[in-house]
Image 1 (cartoon, rainbow, N blue to C red):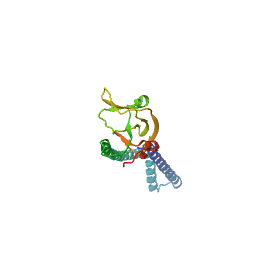
Image 2 (cartoon, rainbow, N blue to C red; image 1 turned 120 degrees about the vertical axis):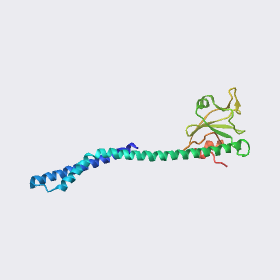
Image 3 (cartoon, rainbow, N blue to C red; image 1 turned 90 degrees about the vertical axis):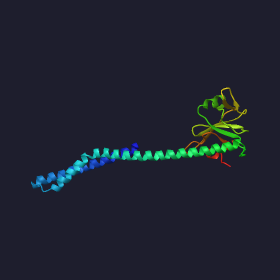
Length: 223
């Protein structure tokens, strides 16, 4: 449960408890005043009311904790259900998008679709230092790329962080890895605002669109 909401519940029950207790004491004073002046108590209803008010006031804190527990259980269950549904939706959308992107990339690489794309964007994490220090990108040898690429760009933590001009076509090294060498690393800061990953495998685009883009939605439109 949200801490701010929990504090509000506690403050509300404390105020209600205090008001009830004060009302009970006020009614009790009235009853005592009547007893002193009339010598006879003809105020059974007032006594009962005072008892209820004082009792409710004293039990208010307990009621507050019980109410908080009930609300907390309800909110927690509701939030968990909502979060589970959101996760399921997010996973399904990401899987669908990845399948579409993979199929689209495969047709580009086979020459079925002629796009003229000259740049590939790839996600990096462990290879981050090699990209910045060595001007080199490595990936498993089974990864495929279209012919004629001139630039390679890099995606990390929901941002395209930069790109470089490829200095030679990819090669297979002795460890069975495929790698690209590029001339220099040019910083870019292109944020991906929607939820989910912008790139899960790779994405092709034109370098001019990448250079002009203010966010990932402007990098490429499928044509």
